[in-house]
Length: 82
Image (tube, rainbow, N blue to C red; front, side):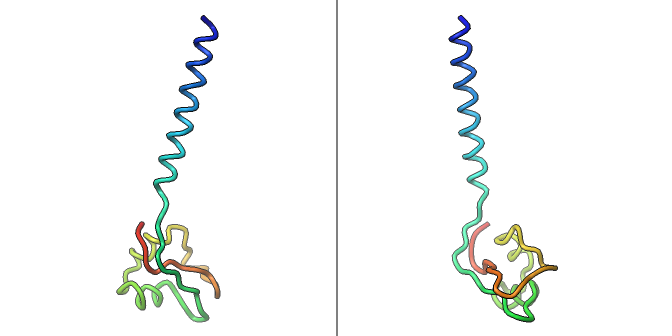
């Protein structure tokens, strides 16, 4: 009786673990084109040049971007899907 319970618990644990990876994996963005930040670039100038001025679009396809700390050579997605 105890062995059946252990197998059930093991099965449920593995199922939940697998489902957590599926949910986490579905939250990634897809980037089609990247841009290397150049001296003087800001989120505003990048969004204006490549995304019709939409900071919301820039943030959506770059969820971890810190507009206060862009650095030269940083890769920024300028075409993709959130």
